[in-house]
Image (tube, rainbow, N blue to C red):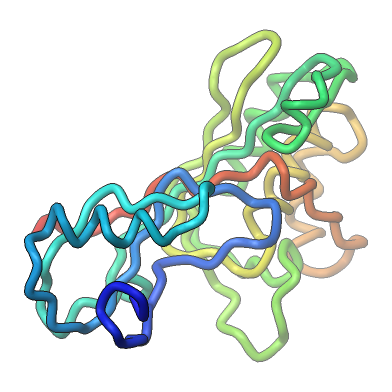
Length: 209
């Protein structure tokens, strides 16, 4: 925007992502006086962005809109391949060639739903409010490739990746789904987050405006 508008406004994002995590959709806001048509402004911004980022839509909003605190929920997807993957796909999904018990994975996903203290299923600091409301968690159909989708009011640092690791580990038999209670209460060793490569910020939901 410095090149396009000559100013550097503060940009507020709906969500930040770790290095190597992908985003199909994110939302940001900034305050600026823009005199050019919307389409021309979007094209000018995209011309200055790197090859991995694109602005799909611009919309004027009121000053009270905050993309981070004003959203209803966020949806993440974690992509898994059941087979060994080719090198060009290694940055976009996790290879899990081991046999997976889908019933246990679905049970683990269901147990994550609800308002809970997810402090021990994340890598957040002790100072944060660690209670989150997981609205939905499901596993897509697919024999060779599938994704884990989790929707929540908000997410703690590395919470989505750790939740995915819990579900996958339940499928491989490394942990029982019923152990979630002990994990959340800190009575069991923390679960290491799944690799960043498979995680996608999929959607950010807002009330219709």
